[in-house]
Length: 167
Image (tube, rainbow, N blue to C red; front, side):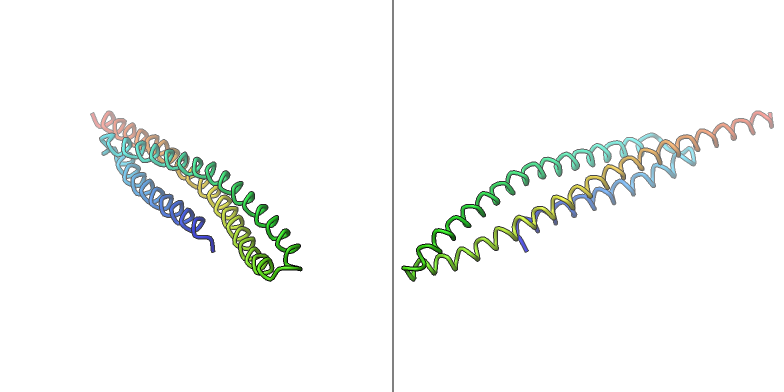
């Protein structure tokens, strides 16, 4: 497999999974506090900060995908150059054993270029899915916080109503 693509894939997967775990834990803590009317607001601030961090991660991944696009274009150009060299070596191979060896070596170079391009395309597709997943997680976290705030307000109002009835 392509080394550069593997490193990029591992970086994106690792960072996104850490961010998802971090946001889920913070949201769970904030939601419990909000529902019990015990939140000081710090938990919500922490969630908002983590959402900002996730949005920065999304931006970083998108920027990396733009850079990868240029790398892919360079690999495609290198592949075309290698194919042209192979064709020239094929012509020279009829008369020269050294040119035949160059032609044979060029096939390996072309195969390597093909593997790198395929790997980069896979990483790009996977990264798009990860970005979408991160965006969904931030949206869900925001919705959970809003819902917990509503539930907290309802329970607070019910508690106040009960106190008023008793008095």
